[in-house]
Amino acid sequence: MINFNQLRVFYHAARYENFTMAAEKLFITQPAITAQIKLFEEHCNLKLFKKKGRKIYLTDEGKILYDYARQVFDYEKEIDDVIEDLHALKRGMLRLGTTKTYARYFMPFMMTSFHETYPQVKIHLDEGSSQAMTLSLLEIKNEVAVIAKAVDHPDVHFIPFSQEELVFILSPEHPLAVKKAVSFKDLKNEPIIMKEIGSGTRKLVDGLFEKNGIIPSILMETSNTEFIKQLVQRGDGLSFVVREAVARELQEGKLATVPIEGKKIYLDVSIAYLKGQRLSPSAQAFLDILAEMAPKKGQDQGIRAIMAKVLDQWK
Image: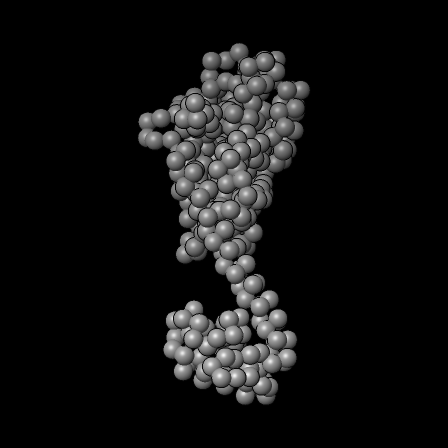
């Protein structure tokens, strides 16, 4: 096994064909250079230098070995450059997980913002239920996730990020659409189209039905919000979704929403990452940007407000 300290001494001595200069470059004494070269020659069982007067010369064997040593230390310089680039975010990979709603309505905007600041960092975006994205952190598939806190885990740290209003949607032709407000009792026998188990929305809606002592009549479970909107628009069922996901359909009158009696319903969205794990420079930079974007107390907490705030800062 080659001793890399000895190889480094040989490389500098061979490069300058001068033990004194090699000692200066390596910040050691000339006798130390001489001793290391002797040990290296003994290890190789080869004569690598010849001396004539005060000058030293590489032997043919030394020249051959120097060509390989030069490649090794050229690569070392490249590795140092790569490490520096990674710290400076001139290269790297950002692995994110998020829900389908955030993937569609927020992440394109967020990734554009990040990419403008760090154009050389590649982004891998994974999407799924909040529970699935929490699992992706535990399996080291993603470093950061923007999700609802659908499941607690002692190894995952959750930082509150935003609150998205959850709205009850129905067809404009549905009898309940004319009411000023509905209660969960009004929904007792209505077909409900639910988000999949593991989503933050599902956990919140299940809890609301349970709190009101109502067992929902579940027509279907799906992770596809677009599919939910189509079914509700056709009058096949009712559902609960994040307002931002149906803003256009509500504005165009394709869907209707009626307030649920009591307070508005909000889905808490968090930034999640593993406890006790040092984040990569790209993940830490993304986290810092999200922290800057996070609404302050008393401000509107939703996606649209966050985007408007950032756009206003850009102007």
